[in-house]
Length: 387
Image (cartoon, helix red, strand yellow):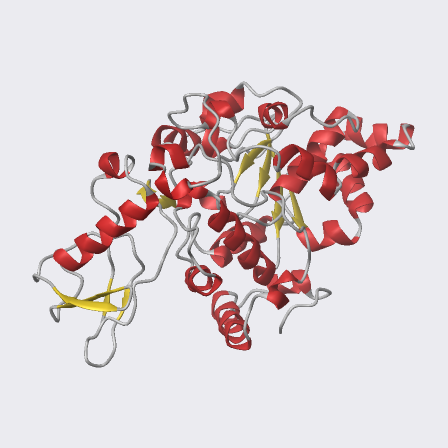
């Protein structure tokens, strides 16, 4: 038996609670209003009696033993459902619905990926191809040129400075599509994606996952129970379109292996103007690579909080400190700085330092099931990942 628990049922009140109080209240809701049909509830390892009534709670689906004993209540990032997808509170409902309704234009360029697969790096390369190797002065200028559609909404994407691209994390069936628009899709091997996504979620205060462990996050990743859904569903939605004339399908690993060659390929895809400029200016590729070097990107993205000031839902413009985020309300948390780095290692193979042999085997089994009948994993035939 498996009981699926619905999200917290009073989002307006939830937004005024701190993560700690929010989780405490949800635990109480779970135990007080229906955590177990057996009449026993376990929160943080402690069993309590409860009244048999339907409940709302933010935690993972409960795991039941043969005697219907609740084994655990697993931490999970704080999300809610909008238009059939999970979204964190970094995304306003208005922006999400606006993004999903956006009508792609013939001259649009989209940069698309599942989260933590190299989107920011690809955005930065595209930005510098457009700018002739002149990096943005700050992150706000960068995001004005390559806005995040689901976070900023359709209007801001239309108003972006041009030439510029639009970032999305949408699967193909939800992606605004125009056969004349261009789509750069980047993916990353699932082992490293999982690790990178874990740190991203853990260090953004608005997810209320600062105490979440990698083991807990791994369970969510391997079952596809995360914001933007299942990794494999996302990649497989785009993979059949990899040979489309208006799609450039890339992997993070190939960008790492030969970034200069990738820059030439991207420039040619963006148009003859950018391809010809690379040929006319021998030093341009070097300037682009220097601008998009990891340390230089960190100067732009790791020196300030996650969302640009005009992207912060309910922002007052006041600076918030990363310390003591447990005492901040959810409204404040989504404006608080990251507690870690937005641009982290940029490494291939970081999974080796995080995944146990059992987790590796579990993910391999998931890969086998999800990619049956597809050769999508051949994308990483030259990458050192488990087989």
